[in-house]
Image (cartoon, rainbow, N blue to C red):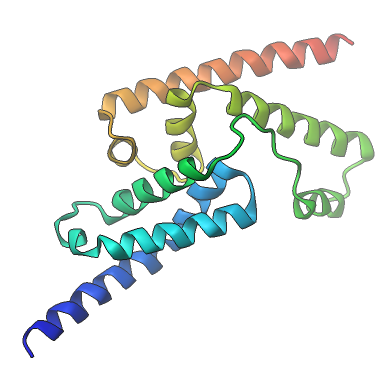
Amino acid sequence: MAAQPAVLNEAEGWEAAVWTHARMLYRIAYAVLRNHHDAEDAVQETLQRAWKYRHRLASVETPAAWLARIAWRVAKSRRSRPGMVPIEELGEIAELRASGASAEELASNRQLKSLADAYIQRLPAKLRQPLLLSTIEELSAREIGQVLGIPEASVRTRCLRARRLLQEKLGVALEKHHAC
């Protein structure tokens, strides 16, 4: 009988951690896979893996980072075509239209978002990964380091380098566009 409460506490702890961080798991999967259905599948697999290793949760310093690391690895393993530029979601287009933006503004916003997405996807993985976790998930450098298995200082350096590269590339692209 004494073993049953420990099992319940373990399951309750796992469930609490999962529900607290469920949105984060989806956003991580979506950031990597750029597809709603694939991201949902990745979250399901993440939950299965987290359940399988739930006994480790008690020794984990940061449950969010532990779950994020699992989600990141699952999503990366499921990514079939790296470097693909996502097509705009219909909801985003409808939202822009509802804002009263002109056709030129809509086209410009879509082109700028597509361009930014393309440049982000073309970043080297070691720069892209920390940037996505930082900007989309708003994880701290320490948490990102735990997810990716790299030092915190490396996370900060890689995010800075990624932002500078994007700023340069977008700046050049916008200059060319305005010159036309």
